[in-house]
Each structure stands twice: as C-alpha cells, then as structure tokens.
Length: 333
Image (cartoon, rainbow, N blue to C red; front, side, top):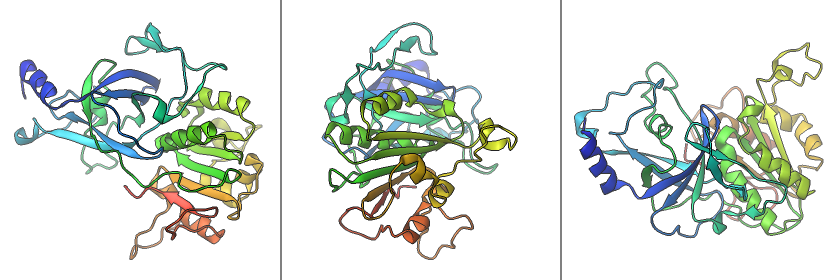
C-alpha cells in the first residue's frame, strides 16, 4: 500500500475534479456535486460519464473488504453514472453537521429552474453498494471509496460525456413518461427540468419505484415543481412501506411495481392522462429486471419487464427516429 505522501502524489497526478457538495439522503444514498478543473463540454440531458478513484483510497468501514493485488493498487477504478440535475436553485451549503460538515438548505418555492446547461458542475445520484450481490461476487470497487469522500476531496471525472438516452424529437403537447427505479431517476430529473425550461405543454410524468419514501432524494424539488407546473407529476411508488406489505393496513395498496401499475391501468389513473402510443413517449432507466431487455438468444424471464409489456401495448423500440409511441432505454448494463 502506498504511504500517505505517495497517495497524495497519485491524486495530484490523476485527479481532475473536486467534490463541491455532498448531500446525504440516507446513510446509503447521496447526491455528489462535482466540478471538473476544465469547462464541461456540451451534452444532452440523459447522458452519462464515468467517475473514478484510485485503488489506494480507503474503503468505508462496514463495506465488503477487497484484496487489491499489488500491481493494481496504483490504478484507477471507474464507473459510469447518468448525470442528474439539481432541478432548482437552493440557498447553498451552510456550516452545520450532516456527516460532512455542511447543511444544504434545499430549494424554496421561489427557487428557479436549473437545467444542466446552466451550471458549472455535474450532479450524481448514487447508492452505496456495501457488498457484492452474491457470495462469489467481486467486492464493489467504487462506491465504498466514494462514500468516504466529502466536499473538497478530489477524484477523476472522465472528459467524454456520452449516451444515446436523450429526449430526441417530441412535440410540445406530447406526454413524456419517465419510468425509473431508485437512482435510475437521475437522468429523468435532468430531462424533466429541460422540458419545463422549454415550456413543454404536454403531461410530464416521472414515476420512480423505490423501497421507502425516505429513498426519494428529490422529493422537495418535485413537490415545488408540481405546485408550479400543472402539467408536471412525480409519483414515488413504494414497495416496502406498511401500506405495501400489511394487508390489514387501512391504506393498503400492495407493492407498487411499475410493471403491474402500468398493466392494471393504475399508472394512467394516477397520471390523469391516457398513456397511449398515439401521444406518449416512454423512457426507462434503472434495474434491468424492470427494463426487461432480453438479448437475442436469451430465455425470456418469468416476470417480464416494461419492454415486452409496452410492446404489447403498441409501443415500439425498433426505431431510428423517435416520436410518440416509442421507447428509449440505455443498454449499458
């Protein structure tokens, strides 16, 4: 393991960006605002970029140990993340405790819209992965290191922002339906903010399946936007709250998975709009099981994801030009 002096030399050699703010929602969920040393190149809402840290960086206590070979200890570990969006201005950080010495006051009813092309940093919405999915999985490499970092710390931000998961062509009165799970909401926040800034007239629905309401890190922003824009709706669809699992709960609704919400018609009912291929664009981001992309030659899963459900409803993803009735999703899983 490099000593502290060499670690600092490695950081100075490789790192090209600074964490300017960290906003914790839970102990395993946070927003990281990162400003690169050089200007951010133009990009489209919905695209992604890789961030990285050195293997020499310490891992957060309570995460799965990792045995890094000596020949790799001075190398970087990177992972691509969709770029999120603050959505609204806020009062900025002030002195106080929140795990990193700062308190973010958050947006107010008077806050202004903040599309991604109007800020000089990138925002990421990230879950801490504490251990591999199975007993034989490799230990997660990046987030156990990233969640040990705070405002002022340095890291790597790749220069190339890429991805085909973008708004594409749409008409001002089209319904824009964004379906995500967990932090898959990130690119949808950037897309929705762009639409609102353009004065989009059609319905904008952001539906995100999460375990608990506390996992909704942008709840305040969404509430303000719904109050301000009659055509905007955010639906946090929970799966583990008491009303999701306790059949004797007075407000029992069951587990609100996007697939069942769509097929039952409940999603359209909550959205108060006809989710028809004639006027609706659908965007999918998050858990691969929710998306339901099945490569050619692969067996169809017992529980289908949104893609086959949407195709059966008349939507298409085998297109070169997007229009109402088409589905967009990212294939980087």
